[in-house]
Length: 278
Figure 1 (cartoon, rainbow, N blue to C red):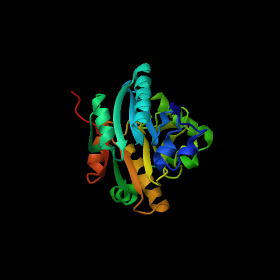
Figure 2 (cartoon, rainbow, N blue to C red):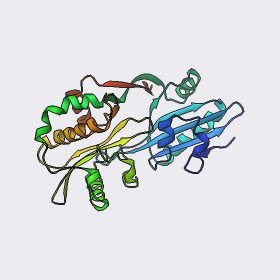
Figure 3 (cartoon, rainbow, N blue to C red):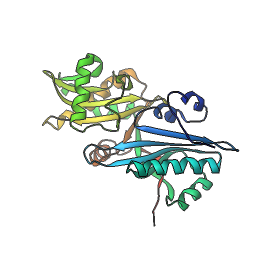
């Protein structure tokens, strides 16, 4: 057995093994994936590199686990622990999907007890967004633009502003991400006389869900956030069926508060996550 990295050169080999979202994300610069072949099958571990500009927190968040061979999994997990130690990363787990009892037992012995529970992600629908925002549409100011209206230079200015202000949302590889990553019709920004005052960015993922990537406001008017929500709701209403899922990660207190205020019925995504460590 030997551990090897999963990258753009060999990703197709794992297309039938990995969930669609894992297959899509693992080749991004803020993700790492490793695999090892054992006698009974393959073991895979994929983690997200979280680097919060505003807090300086650096983590390795385990997102996906495949364990078809315990010896192979032991190899990839020890590789992961060494990676985290070498890069001074805190280790966290928020795994989509279930984790086997055998794997949980192994991880508990390693000092990482896991439990099923509420994750950071919640889901609403396009219809939910439309219902909340439709009554405010008449107030949308002219300086809110779809990013599809911007040329490449203007769009680059939006992304650089987000980076400069540490407002990367959940796009921890914003500096290197291709602009095609963003859904350009529904995503919008506050853009006035060449100045970027805010951004509301979506990504259409491999499951045909709309992920909210960045919600940032640099203006002094708190209503501008609502205006961006309204604009995106209006466009999404035209472009997507009402039952299209929108994924929101409550990665900050501000985002958690916004979800609780506007979408109190949002459905929580259940994950396998960190339990109580002794």
